[in-house]
Image 1: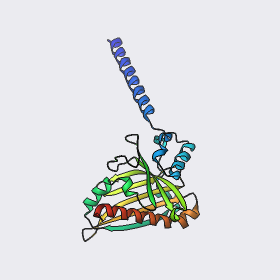
Image 2: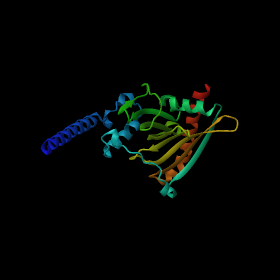
Image 3: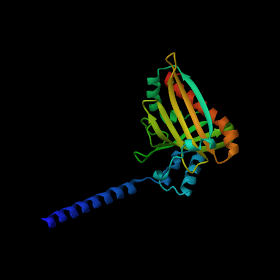
Image 4: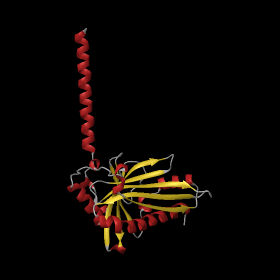
Amino acid sequence: MKRIHSSIMKAIVSLLLIFCSIVWGKSSYAQLKLNAVDFNKVSQKKVQNLLKHQFDGGANYFMDLRPSCYNVKDSINYSQQNSSHIIKETILKVWAKLKSIRPKDEYNGKMVSFGFLYSKRMDKIFYNNDDIKGIEEGEVLYLNLKLLGGIKNIAVALEVTKVDEDNKIIQFCYLDNGMTEGTQQVRLIEDKDGNTIITQESHYRNKSKFREKRLYPIFHRQAVNELHVNIQKFIEGM
C-alpha cells in the first residue's frame, strides 16, 4: 500500500514539474524584447534612443523594466509640483472618459506626442494607430516632449502603477534607467458646483539638479497644461 502511495506521489510531482516547465517555457518564449519595437511606426528619434539606452542598460525584455516611484521615506530628496484644471462635467463622466481616451488623442499637442504603448498584461506593443481600449495598470507609455519649440527633444517612459476606481486616481511612475525618478498622480475631485477638478501632483528627482530645479518645473507645467486642455476638449467637445 505504501509503495502504491509513493508511486502516486512521484507521478503527481513529475506531472507538476512538467507542467511548470511548460508554463515557464511558454512565458519566457512569449516575452517581448525591447528590440521588437518597429521604429518605422515610432517616428520620434528620442523615443528610439531611450529604448536603446534601456537595452544597453541591461533590460532585454519589456518585463525587465521596473518603475522608479516616489519614495515617501526619502521625500526630502524629491521636488514637488502641483497643477489643476476645471472641467465642466460630472466626476463620473470625466472619470469614464479619462479612462477611455486614446493615448494618441490625449498626448497630441505642440509639446507632447505619443510614441507607443506596451501592455504588460498582454505582453504586446500598441502603436499610434492601433486600437487601445482603456487605461490599466501595467501599461508603459513612451512619450516625446518638444522643448523650446522643438529645439530640444526628450523622451520619457511612464508606467501606470495604479487605477483607483473608488478615489478616482490614476498614478504613473517613471521607469528606471531614465534621467528622472518619481511619481505623477492624477486625481479627480468634485467641486461645490458639480464640476470636476483634475489635479496632477508630481514628486520627482532628476540626475541633474539643474534640470530638476530650473528646467523641469517650467516644462512640466507647460506639458501638464497642454494635457489638461486636450482632456477638456475631448470631454467637453470643444
